[in-house]
Image (tube, rainbow, N blue to C red; front, side, top):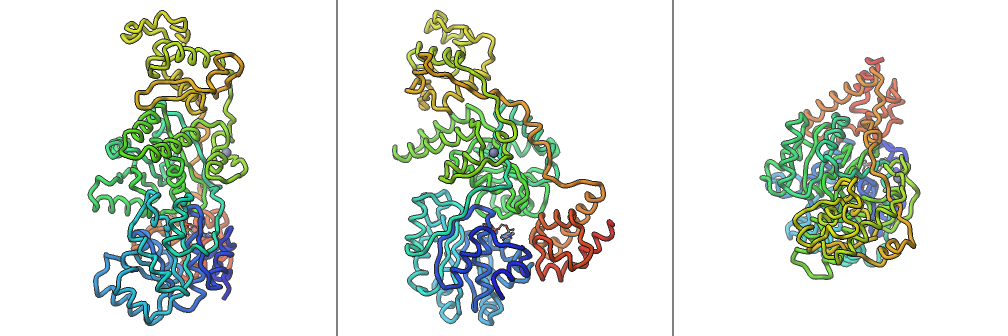
Length: 593
Ligand code: ADP
Ligand code: ZN
């Protein structure tokens, strides 16, 4: 059997993606590799296919039980015998697993790093033929990342104990520091790197300025009632509050954060995985191990601390390759809060500076007028074409000459000695006789009341954009606005400023729940297949996508194959699914006629 025939017959996919084939060939030749591929890029097949082609058992190291369970269930569904070994198995279950492995019934074993490095497991392996080691989520080895797991560093024994067995380290997140750690601890200094493009073609990026944030969220959700999504908030309290709010508004929302009891967290996670229309409201704690392919949107209700985090979190949308939204709702207040949080934290100055720079990029992403996908990748060091789908691509923001207005703002900042906050600057510009204005006699300034026709929100927006465009600085500890090199040419009238008009047309951008075709009979067929899948998932106690991916259902509804021969051409239908479900699917389709 060739790699391609396994891809087609076992997994039901037509072609390899990007670097998959190259990586597989490399492992088959007995060499080690380092793979950097975005979430949803298809890392698992890179080691699963060689595992099937080689004689022996592959060991996959993975940090989380939930992740392993899901992978094993999906593999067994397509007819690849695999199992996992983790702390939730008792001694008898482990003995049974061992005996299956000894009898060569198993092609892939998933295991946690702790158990991998334990003496009893190493001893067991002495008499086992191992094909390869795959180290999934390899960035956990590095303390630079946000998922550091000390146990991962012990994996350096792999290189020493099994020097001749190929190792493949895989991750979706590795800056240069993390990369060095991975190579060091996993003994991969000599191994070549396989780096895929990080562009997620199916994600539609949108950034929305906060006006009435909850109302904006409800408007979005109203149009996505039949989809699963994740909403990220920056604090546990906010997660709880928003979950309640959504439940009161008849949404199926569940909460996830580190302050919740483990049982509740797990129940909520499971409920989210099993269903197609649940909203998970979560903090960053909901991260690693979310292997749900049909997440239709990731909604950042608050701004993340960095663009890397944003990329990881938004990347949880649309892993099945179907269109999905990444929405961020942002405002000035959270920019100030986040900056202050970083400054107040106990950390070295150098680290703070590093974090502030990362946050600044996040802010720039929000306020940009260019293609968001392009900017996001540019920040990650990759050049790409315009995505054609983000809000800025779909409707070019209208830029208006704001030079005079900006001059008024800058000159007020200058006149008060660069020692006052945004609120105070706005009071002066709007001609508001606040206590502070009176105390400092700022009503005597020539700019007092020059923007009396503008509301405070719009002025705050302008000041935010001046900051994100680098035209002013902010002393975040006390909130004072400061001029910089770039402010001066504008103040002197040497340079013009064009700022984008506030968007009001989000509704149009967010119009469609992901492209389900929707003639009445299509709709009926779609729902019939969903119910059928739901029942099977319950029967076999696996997730719904292990039975059949969403994209498969989509293709079934669009193409309506009438016999099992035609079924083979459908995405995700390999020999095993064809044999097990083929007839039932055809009869569902024919019934709809
Ligand atoms: P990652 O681990 O990189 O986040 P996965 O390995 O879970 O991604 O793959 C994401 C999805 O893409 C899975 O549903 C997987 O079966 C599917 N997939 C992987 N490779 C291909 C391919 N060559 N063609 C079609 N689908 C693929
Ligand atoms: Zn774009």
